[in-house]
Image 1 (spheres, rainbow, N blue to C red):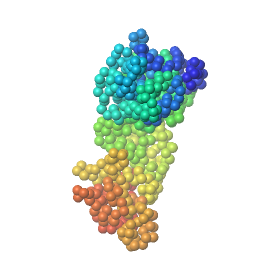
Image 2: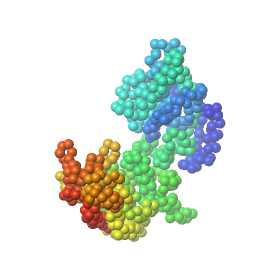
Image 3: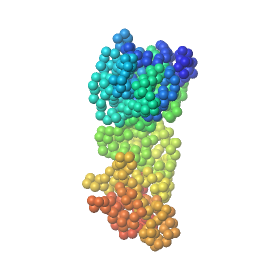
Image 4: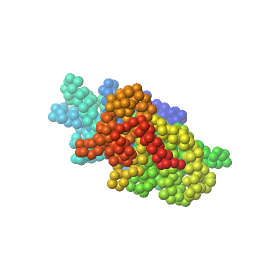
Length: 635
């Protein structure tokens, strides 16, 4: 592969003609394209430093990539092509301290340096057996990792996220390659140290399998690494680097739309801004800190951000030649998200960053990233909305949180609207009406109606209620679903409803967190069938519910086992299971506390007072619960 490198610049230019305008639309200025063996790229006598900027991704390679890299080096001849790195010359003093900022290829470059460190560690164990030439090569190996005549000037500087830089220094210090530095806590649980240990094991195994002098095998492996080739593409600025990166990156960890939005934004700010790119990156990190590291949530925020404010975002793009109402697009989706934000960023990256920062802080409230910053009523409302799977409404809440003062709304009004949405989603999710595909446009339509009607105060609530109510299934359909096999139809809604009823009867002294999860992320409190749902109905239950008639018991089970009247909440479902009714009712733990139906939840009060459980009692309890639910979730 390396043999084709002399034509690589022309190949890149040809590819950019096809791809370069797709993302960023920036002209690429390639300063140089050169192939280097690792021995030259990390020249022991040179002073070149490769620094991975802190805004790059943390080190993400794992055993799959480590194994592939090592096997490829082992199985191929000298001169194996390792890949490409894209760099920017960021030297302040090019003579004394030439520095390259690695925009792409950091995963591979960091991994190669860790492989060299592992080789150094194992060769050091045979230091007394080295020939004079081997001792020279051993010294040169150290200088590939740390600059000559320095004790701590590392040649490859990983970015600092997730302790990458600290762990890397710790690994080098542990091998006495740099001056002493403590190994960070828990480094062994993170990827940098794991990669180093992986390569030590693989090298040791290769030495064992070679069946020759260990020193010879180690230096053969070192020669394989030294002779392997990387192509270094140098560009003139961050904008060019990011655009090239976006166009060529089809390997390693796939880029996401959010990665590309970040890259484009930083490139634009770097070329147009007065602050350092580190400053802008810190602000970007603050945005992600507010919305969390779950990519699904990040992408949803960017879609909601556009859909909530599409009118104001589109205003600057309307012109005599483009009179469309929404030139950027009527709706942000996964497929057009990048195109929309590219145009917004290109026009005014500073305003975009300011607005995004503000909106991310508001979104953090809605997704309850910082519960302590919210009033109890708003916190409970937003938590309940999340639990009832009401995330499509977040775009409307984001809009309301942003403009609540202009709409003459108070926090209590926002909480009231959130409660309305909770009721909406309980009913919608159980009846599946309106369909999921309509929800985003529906909430965008609510915003349009608020703006078009210049609604204020109570009018805002009325507009929202009118649109939500008109789209829902009737009360009769909702009640029919409540009386049906709700456990089978929608477990999450059934659990939410029953938890709400149970919570309504709690006092400060008896409050229990029904939403607590165990270490595996599973709810501790789960739904439990009073009359068991299993195919093999226990004899005690057949006798109680059908007077010993197996067929009759089966019929009753099929009719009512999943209905509300037969469901309750317990933190010990697995210990109750198919046990007889009285045993389930009176069950205690090892400390003598009731964990069955006498566990103190008001939801179980009527069950705890029964001595048997029949189809009639299930139907009666269903009636009572349905009546309560219709009142609690009334529109």
